[in-house]
Image (cartoon, rainbow, N blue to C red; front, side, top):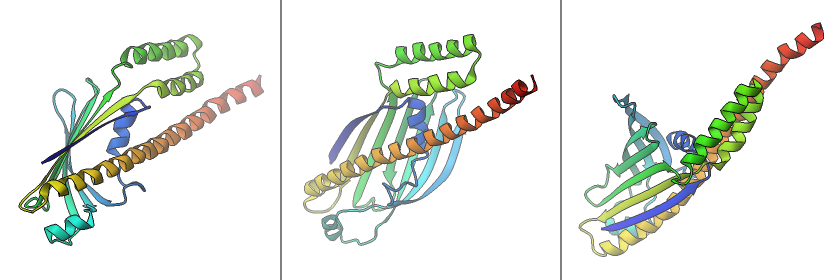
Length: 226
């Protein structure tokens, strides 16, 4: 058995990172994931969102692993379960393969939390932005100020993968090879998250621009009438 761990800090607020994680696939950085099916999604009494998904993927096993396990099949199904707790600001995701389990098993756990140094700053900055909006009665200034401030917020991602190769010689070596592959894929996954976040931010900016035009048009017309 091989245990691989990693930690990464996103320079984005927890809400944005969580939304991006749930919309991560498809993306150009992880083309191996070609199918995502939602099996179940529900809210519990505490307001937490529970989701179960099935991922279809070309697992991309190293060639040496394929030769030793004697299987050229590459399509693999991953079972994924996640919980989003908006009150505690925690997003936990667990996944495991449901094919090749007689030879290889990979159990992965990811946890997204706000950076522990940020909560007080988050509250004070958001309060400042909200007060600014109330005092000046200017929604546009509030949006501009708020979008600049959220860049300060950070989210910590911790990852752990437990890899087991069974009934094969050199299993320890193969587990190490697979751990290296998981590390490489994790890097691509973080790039994919940034790609999704840029796309979401572009959508927000487009919405803000539309709102800006909608608000200013009646104002301009009123000035003209005067």
